[in-house]
Image (cartoon, rainbow, N blue to C red; front, side, top):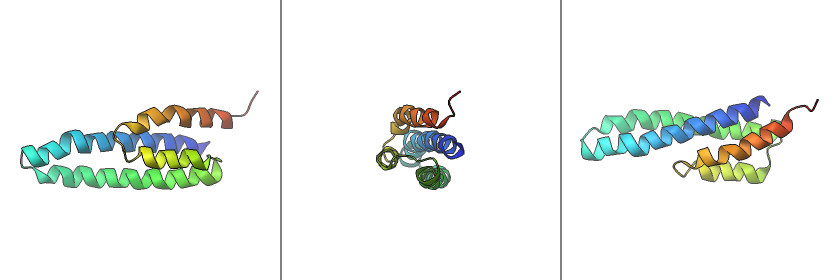
Length: 101
């Protein structure tokens, strides 16, 4: 359960950092001549991407995340905005792990 929650948080954080990189930092670099914006936002995005990868592996092993869904997470992390659409599938898998009363 912990790893699914962590995976969902990291997926959303990675998606947000990717959008900030593409929609704010890159235009600042190329249109305003501020390459430092890409440097710092790129570092943050790299950390988020690494965290997403690690939490994805942990979810595969400990939360019984289906391999196919793990591959979808990997593909979604490369497309701006895709992690937000994938979150419903992660939420569904997370809810299946909850104990039934």
